[in-house]
Length: 132
Ligand code: CMP
Image (cartoon, rainbow, N blue to C red; front, top):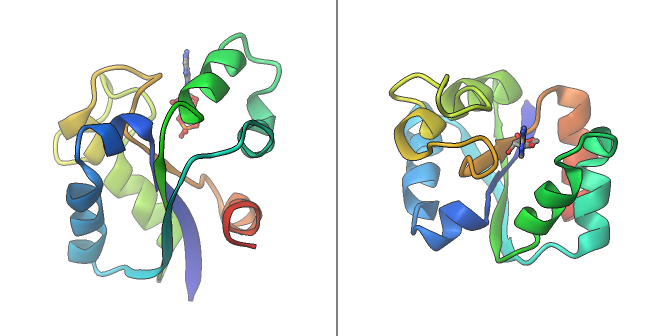
């Protein structure tokens, strides 16, 4: 059974959206395998977002993700990575369809409520970083 890493980002936690996000994954039929509230240390944030290190928004991204508690989760089920990404919607909330988490709850790309792994390889890496 495939696993994926998902987290409610500081904006989602602050807005009280943990329950709404968890509900959508449960309704879809995925199984919650692990979860915790945590404030991400800067070094972990930089490693998690390592592929974006050269982007001009990298500093802001790390500042934002370490700015308050997140709710980190592991979800399990058939095609968990792709199913989670479909529930979450496109990275830019302006392009995310209604019915998706970002489409329904977010407006701008730098605070888009939730993160989900983009491949089974990323999922294994991110689960290792956060729950290893
Ligand atoms: P996430 O799925 O967590 O993975 C990388 C994140 O970078 C992405 O969601 C966005 O929140 C963020 N991101 C992408 N583009 C920008 C941007 N132009 N400015 C700030 N953050 C961005």
